[in-house]
Image 1 (cartoon, rainbow, N blue to C red):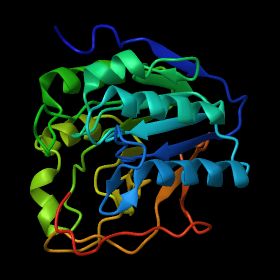
Image 2 (cartoon, rainbow, N blue to C red; image 1 turned 30 degrees about the vertical axis):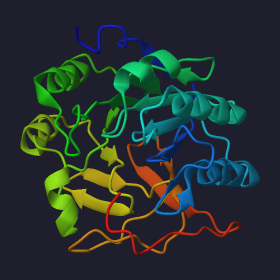
Image 3 (cartoon, one colour; image 1 turned 135 degrees about the horizontal axis):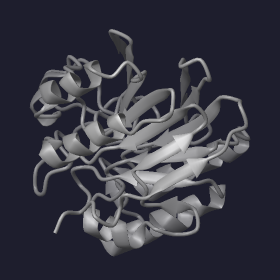
Length: 279
């Protein structure tokens, strides 16, 4: 059975003619254990610091995008914790799976008053399309025919002025050698679809645990730091970075521009074991 049959509903968010404000939170890597840690960093503590920062900054978002690797161990407890913790923001949340996730558990457990399984979000002059690039028991990603068809049909039925596709895996070379084979396997096919659509203004992803902001033609290519550990940019082999956990704020303007900034957690000190050579 396809995983998408029960997840085709659309979410409509009214923003009354102003730019839509979105927060991207990605790669929290939550464990079943309350003190579960990744490279020595307690990932629940880190996520809570992210949410505390959002509240301290009084960021009133219209939507939160959780872009994969929500769980590290695929435990029901990790998803239940994420849902309960995220509810404090009282903001609509949509999600996609990452390579560490179990999409079927996510479908069951990440569906509440604030968390939606919708994969198409109509917000202001924009439509956001959430794509599943995860593969069972694989770190690299692939959209495959089903997801590419979903994107094509979304484009064909598009009534919004602008389109923002979102996925987990990186579709471009980020000059980080060890991550290169762990990106999106069918990126070429993805860009064939995107290049044929004049409404596409951005492409957003997670997975790489670091910031990325480049243009490919008219499309702004964006990746966001993890809410847990960071990967060192431009590294040949696996290496953790010393940057703090972070998240991204996006404003989708009525003229098709994307205004965005990355926020880092500065009010809490985090401990990371830099001697670990994998995760």
